[in-house]
Length: 488
Image 1: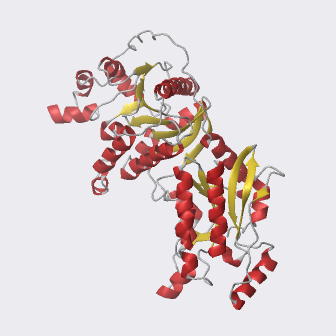
Image 2: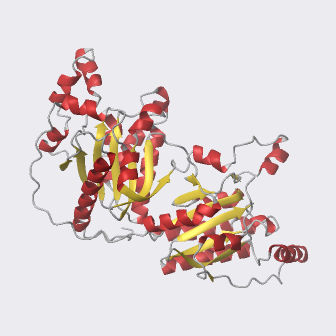
Image 3: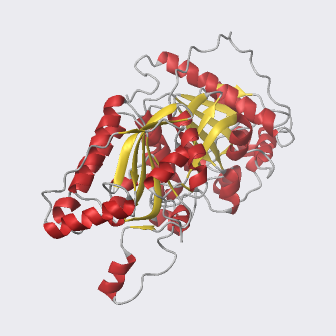
């Protein structure tokens, strides 16, 4: 079972030495009922704290953030009305001061000694958090053992990024309550942090000793910067067609060793912070991350072709994860990069019943109306509705061998000729190749790639990042209403 960290010990572990500034005001318990007052006084003596949370501000690697840190040793970390007043005051102060907010929960939920009046304070805390997020300010949650009940079901689950300590018990329903109500134990392994990561409910497992590093990375990525003026450039010379046919390009993008989204970020990005799923489910085939590309903080929504081919196709959950990324970019005022690289969305009865078509349309709609600078790059394969959903950015570019088609050429051949033998022929006729897409005005630019990307993944990644960031700067310069870091 996970260790229960004291709030002050966790703060000392994470923030820069000497930077902590407490925001807490004394809490007067003289008006509490006698029995309850005695419990609170004993909890103070036992825990060395005056309440179940501490709040304040501090720096991490020189970047200032506000903090709310719970401590289970004080009445099970439960939230009473005075606890809520402290939390809400800290959230609103962080919003007023324009600070990112980091909350670390460790709580059994509502303070049962206060009942419903304490229970409904989760609403006021959540409203303050939503106002903070609506101001375009980051909210990061670190869930510690245990985080349950109303805390988990309200402000503890509203983070832009949510991580948890290893083996922490995290869940809405207390196992003891379940057992009493149902006369049987709650199944083991369900309310464990690792299981929630597997189901896309939280983003990652982070050990306390690594929290400082993860928080510093998040603050670097979530701190917007001025994209600056576009690099001066003349009209680029026309890129000569790559030797070989469109079919040769298609086959090149299907090679197992061709770099994908993960290789691009590994070799071309810094401060990469992967996020998992939608907050409610895991979406195989869709890689979502915060990262810096050429120093620019971005939200990256990338189709992971390798996972789609081996670990699960791009289905409704993956598209909902893409929508999460698009909304995240919009909420935080960060540039958005969409990477198209898919053999096609999931074609199965389960995907149909899961609303695949609707999720394609909703992803397309979210991307079409986003106001932050956005670029979509066709990294390789661009098949069907799965590719179309992530296409309508401000700028659409493609790698030299990239292609876009309503179906894989073999599928088009099956429809038109009742066989797959005409795939190569149809790939030319349907004008799916990058040069044809440029001629037809479907894309804005072709990005040269190494002769063998598999042999030079770093060169491939650097070409992708250079092209994407150049386009982002151009878009940002045109969008006069858009300001880095300001919520539109």
